[in-house]
Length: 376
Ligand SMILES: Cc1cc2nc3c(=O)[nH]c(=O)nc-3n(C[C@H](O)[C@H](O)[C@H](O)COP(=O)(O)OP(=O)(O)OC[C@H]3O[C@@H](n4cnc5c(N)ncnc54)[C@H](O)[C@@H]3O)c2cc1C
Image (cartoon, rainbow, N blue to C red; front, side, top):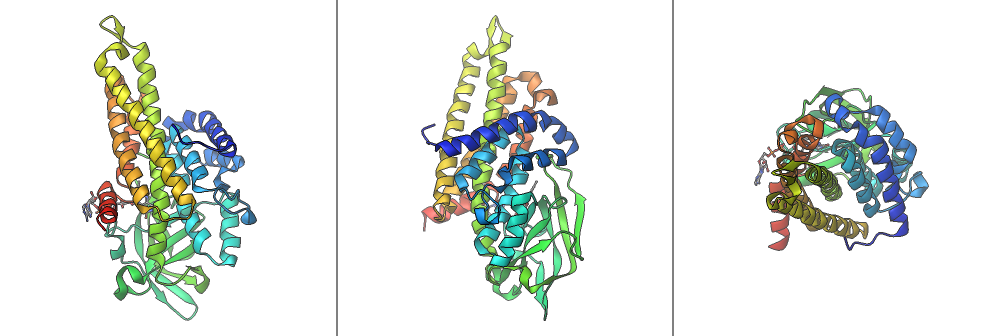
């Protein structure tokens, strides 16, 4: 890959890589069966990596989107669900970093740097791709707001300390009537519904949320009233770069398993990698993962300059998630019957990556973003 990391970035990569190899990879299969692993998260906090994007004045490392992409990419080589749980907290963190008041930053960013987790709450049971059609209502009162409604498929929702929630303050104004709020765990009226029994990303924690006359103070508002949808879309640009990092790390993992297996497995008197049909699959895997990395770090670098990167993030996510699915399928094929067994891990990678074609905007939504930008 021709993308050049600085020596500091290489140090972070080495730290994330070592942590992944020692702590994440060995737990991957158990977490797929048992779900979220708090013990792993506590070990992760000890590395300090969770504080990477938080400014130094709030206890973080003050580093950029490139360092965040490096960490997510490395974690995903061990377990995509854990990488996703970490990156989605950063999506909400980024919204707080950009738009919160000084008082809110001092409270929430400091907490997040210390290891608290955040949820990003946009999707509703009746509003996913068309998120602006959400029904959750935040009614203004003398002292603040009362929220009623529900959210669906919220990552980290059973384990989060903070929730960034998008809700309608002015239902007649469509997307311009949506505001963002920071809500703390345990707020009366905040109900965490049953955990979702998912196809993949099973190490991440996912629930729906209900808001039953949930009263929150005025200072729970994040940024300006009516700007919540814009903030959420900006946040999702970063989220889509993280999805690219996850698909890239996961695809490299699948490629590695298939390559190693093909060197050792013998059929018709030679290692299967000497059969051209297998070798060509490996060649395609190597080529696509290389291209994914370039798109990933190109988009991350653009975002780190502060420029809007919706097009690049959508292109990178669409490319990486689509080809990672094909890479996982090809890896399963190379392993033959063993590819179909949980023991060899590639079937888990396929299940995990499928979400990257759906979450943080489906691949159809990415094509809407890309075509909208190129045909403007
Ligand atoms: C495991 C998991 C974790 C998630 N975590 C979060 C989270 O932390 N926070 C959060 O807010 N959300 C989260 N989501 C929700 C996710 O972002 C949505 O599922 C996704 O945006 C799609 O919305 P939907 O499921 O309602 O599908 P729908 O919007 O109902 O779409 C159904 C199908 O129709 C297609 N479609 C819709 N509109 C169009 C169109 N205009 N043109 C072409 N095709 C279209 C879609 O592409 C899709 O194929 C998560 C989802 C999952 C499964």
